[in-house]
Image (cartoon, rainbow, N blue to C red; front, side, top):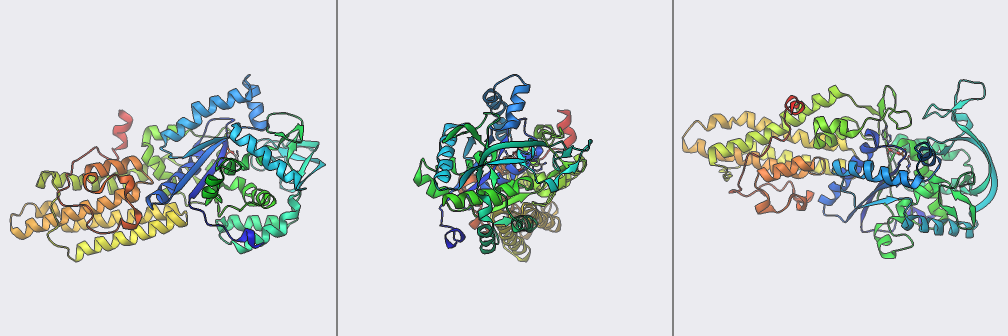
Length: 535
Ligand code: ME8
C-alpha cells in the first residue's frame, strides 16, 4: 500500500470546492465553502505558490432532471440558464478568483469519465447485479435503512437530512466493488492522519469504514440524464460517480498529462460535512481502483443553520448572498462568515451578530485606524509620509506584534484552514496598533512645536502607516477590495508594486513602506450601515 501512502510531489497548490447542483440558485451555504476556498487560495498565491482553484456545477441526475421537467425545459437548457444567470454571476460578485469552472455536461468531462469507468470495468472492478433499497433524490444518495427517520405512514421513511420521504429503488444495475477497499482505506487513513479534517469528521469516516462497506450501485436505467456507460448505453452513470471525477477531468486527466502531473493529486478538497463519505471513502476507493494517487486532504466544513436545520435549497430555507452583500458589502460578507464560525463547526447566521461585528471590528477597529492615520499624514505632512525619526520600545512592540500576527495567520489560514483563528490574529495586531496610537496621542504631540515632538510625530505616523501596509497585505485574501483601497491610500504601489505581488514571507519585514509615499485619504473602508441603507 506504500504507493497510496506516499503522495508524489506536485508543483501546484490545487484546491477544489464541491461542484454544486444547479437545481436551484446558490444560497449562503454554497457561498460559505466557495469563499473559504477563495481565501485559502488567495493566501497561497500571496505565498508565491503556483495555485489552481477549481469550482463548478454538477448537472446530471434525477434531481436536476425533475427540476427541469417541472419547469418545462430540457435539463441542458435548465443547467445553462442557472449556470449563466445565477452561479457564475454570484462568484464574480463575491470576487471569487477561481482558475477554472467545470460543468459535468462538458465533453471535456464526460469523455474522460467514460474512459475512467471503462478502465475500471476492464480491470474487473465493476460487475452487474441488482439493488433494492432506499434512495433520497435530494441527496442523490442511497441510504442505509438504519439512518432513516419514521415518516407519516407506517411504510414511510424520511431522509435524515431532507426530512422528506425516501424512494424505494429496485433495479438491475452495475456495481463498483467498494467492499474490497475497506482494509485498504483504513490502512491509508492510518498512514495519513491528516487526510480527513477536522478530527470529528475523520472519526465519523473511520467508524463508517470499520463496519462492512457495501458495494456501490453506479448505474441507473430508469432515466437517461447522465453519462452513458460506454459498454451498455441503456445505463447512465450514477450522478455521484460522474461528479467526483470533475476533480481529475478538469485537471487534465487523460487529456493533458503535463497539466495533470502538475495539479494532481489535489492539495485540498473542500466539502460540506454532508458529502464527506463520498469524498473520503468512495472517491479514494475509485482512485485506488484506477491506480491514481489520492488527494492530500479532505476538509469538511460545518453547516450554516436556519432554525436548527441545515440551510438548504430543497427545504426552501436558502438565503441569497446578495440579500446580505447589498447591505453589508462584499468584503464584510467574505469576512463575517469565516470570522464568526470556526471552520468545521455548524453555525447560525444572525443579522444582529453581523451588524455588531461590522460596526466594532470592521468600521471601528480597522476602518477608523486606516482613515485616522491617513488623515493625520494629510493634515500634518501634506500627505507625504515622513520617515520615522526613531524606533523605540513602543515601535518595536508594534513590529514584534506584526511578526507574531503574520506567523500565526500564515499557520492558521494557510495550513490549518482555521480562518477564524487566522483572521483573529490579524485583528489582534490591529488592536495593538490602535492601542499604540491611543498611547502615543499623535494629535496632542502635533500641537507642540518642539523639535523632539516634531520627530515623535513623524515616528508615530510612520509606524501607523507601516503597520497598515502590512495589514493590507494580510487582509488582501479575505477582503480584496478594502485591502486594495488601503494599499492605494498608502501610496504603496509606487514603491512596492501591486498588492497582489506582496509576499507573506516578507510582510513582517519592518520598514518596507518608504518615507515619501503619497498618502491620500481615500474612501471610508466600512461606512456606517445606516448611511448605506439610506443610499
Ligand atoms: O452536494 N452550510 O451539491 P450541493 C454549509 N453536487 N455549507 C453548505 C450548506 C450549508 N447549509 N449547504 C450547502 C452536492 N453547502 C454535490 C457535490 S462534489 C463532487 C458534488 C455547501 O449543491 C457544502 O459545501 O448540494 C456542501 O457540501 C455543498 O454546498 C453541497 O452543494
